[in-house]
Image (cartoon, rainbow, N blue to C red):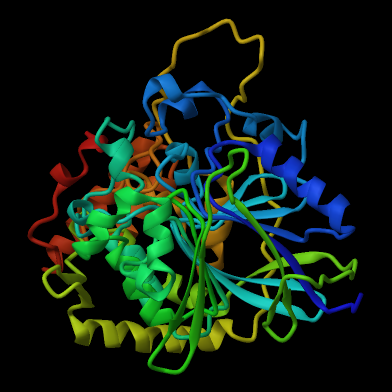
Length: 469
């Protein structure tokens, strides 16, 4: 057998909490092929349920709720046999994934890409850029500036996994080459680039949406045309489907969707990504070098450029326009978008020469399930914590995770971010002080000085800080 230099990759469709089963399948493949799988890529519905609180935070009929086996990997009782990277789908422990909104380790050796992200995967001399967008598209929630508060209502358990315009906007600012992209639902009209008759034969109920031109996600169609990755993997529709997209730029995207983990279903595909960027299916790499993850410099620049927008998420303007008659999604506020691109390019100068490895900074943040738990009822959690991984990540931009309280996480004992767009420094001081009375006096003094200097914002007064009263 000819030896090649590359990364042995397994791709899986819908995970549905089957950690033991899928990892067992990986081990079986390794034994049969006498290879080592370096990386497992998962296209959503992973269901990282640590305890019964997490079960309550998953959109799923109660009769189908199961603890699954993830909690064993969360506690370290079991370890994933290979590095596993996933994006979110529409059946997830949404409270836990919110803790790692920008990406992070859900347990040792299993990494969540976050709502949107681009990272670098490296093994030896082989590297590739991996991008992803979690969730599925929903027209009502896409342009809705309201982010789900916590605890989630029944409606929010669904809207929380709907793709938000802000994540699409950040990915739209990416101008580099992405080699592999992960999504849960399929790009709109992708079926036209593959064997559409075979797809309808397997899934007859797809035919009506295909004929109406409504099959797939318009946001992912937009990203497919914008990013033009070499490979795009997806799931959601519970069927294996292949397509080849020829872009106007002469680049090509190989699309593959996979089924869910069930006996006899095509839910797993193994191949080798070579140093040259070629995918091989009958030859595998045998090097023993470790596989490593790095932050992507351009994505860090995008995150820094767009960070302040997150602080006014509830007032975020409309960023995209959708024309369903023409099946078109396009960016608006073009001048502002160009300014964001320029700002990103300026920041990229600071990041492009840095090679920052993603740290193994996983910590247990919730009490895991145990088999002898005497309670049978679901309990209602009252917060989504500020995970240490978000805090560490934001230090790369000299930002504080506390600024996002009330948006990305919800700790009642911490002051929430208020609806004041231009007073971030004042609010930050509130959040980092331990003595509430001391902070109150300091802010009142600042406001008094601002008034004397006639620089006081006419809309700002102590009533804007009800938690100080």
